[in-house]
Image (cartoon, rainbow, N blue to C red; front, top):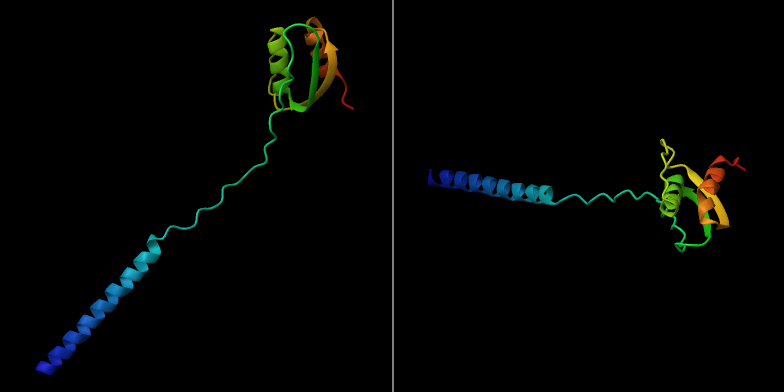
Length: 118
């Protein structure tokens, strides 16, 4: 009888040890964090730098496929006149002109906006 109970005890102990070992292995697998997903990178066009001009004298411009909002902001800073763009601020504009008298800059901008597309 003692032998049966000892064998039963050994069987029970081995089952408990095996279960504990199995649980600890599966727990380690669950605790490992998944590899982080790489972030999506979108190509973004860098902003076109505004031309550097003096505070007096003629203005020269070289905006090539620049957002209309940037061009309007530049003209506003040079003339002091504001603009309402009505949702067209993301449209691209190319405006290259040299030696515009500062007092004619607003009119030149209006002409550039009204010019037909080539």
